Amino acid sequence: MSSKASVNVMAPPVFDGTNYQVWVVRMEAYLDANDQWEAVENTYEVSFSLDNPTIAQMKNHKESRQRKSKAKASLFAAVSSSIFTRIMTLKTTNEIWNFLKKEYEGNKRVKGMQVLNLIREFEMQRMKESETIKDYSDRLLDIVNKVRFLILISLILELFKNFLSQLLKNLKLQYHQ
Image 1 (spheres, one colour):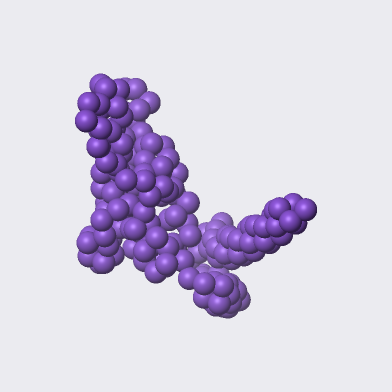
Image 2: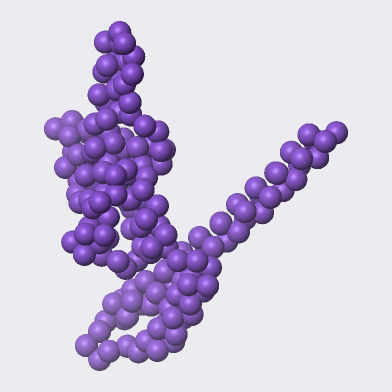
C-alpha cells in the first residue's frame, strides 16, 4: 500500500464542541497531510474564464476544485451532527473554518476563565481507591497540559500582535524617511 493511500484512510478527528484547541491542531495536521490545508487557509476562487485553456490549465483547475471539495467534505466529516447542522449552509471551507474558530475558540476573557476552571478542577482532584498511581497522575497531567496549551496559545497570539505592531511602526518610519 502506498503512503498516499494510507494517509487517505485516516479518519479526521471529530469535534464535538469540546477541546477546540486540540481539535484545531489535529485537524490542521490532517488537512495538511491530505493536501487540503491550502483550500481552507486561502480564500481563492476556483474559476475558469479562459477562452482557450491549455491542458495544464484545465488539469490545474480540476485539481483545485477537487481539493476544495475534499477539504469541505473533510470538515463536514470532522464535526458532530449537532455542529454539522450549524455549518452545512456555509459555502466555502474558509467560511466553515472561521465560523468554528469564532464560535469555539473564545476570546482572551473566555480563555482566562477556562484556565481558572482547569486550575480549580486540578485542585479538586483526589485519587480514587480503585485507581492506580499512573491513572491518577495521567488525569492530573491531562489537566496540566490543557492549562499549558491555553496559556501557550495566548502567549503566542500576544507575541505575534506585538511583533506585527512593531513591524508596522518600523515600516511607517522607513516610509516617512
